[in-house]
Image (tube, rainbow, N blue to C red; front, side, top):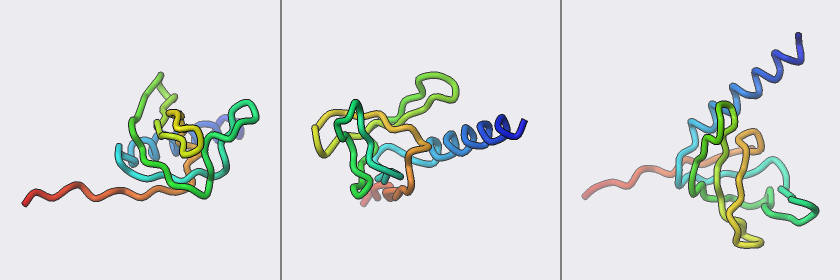
Length: 92
């Protein structure tokens, strides 16, 4: 039962983060992101959120561009360690 509560808490936290972060915001990852041994993203870098996708209920991702390969990479909210909200543009 305890494990199910932890899983539910992680899903709620990931969903909260996904809703808090907007397109154009900058995110930083907990750790480097690799795919099949190839580094895609670095934890020391910030990445601009280019899109947000809700692939299925509880399966939300951010889309960023890799500074290593130039490819678009999906990032799950639970991998985000911090983020900076960009202020909305002001009209003059």
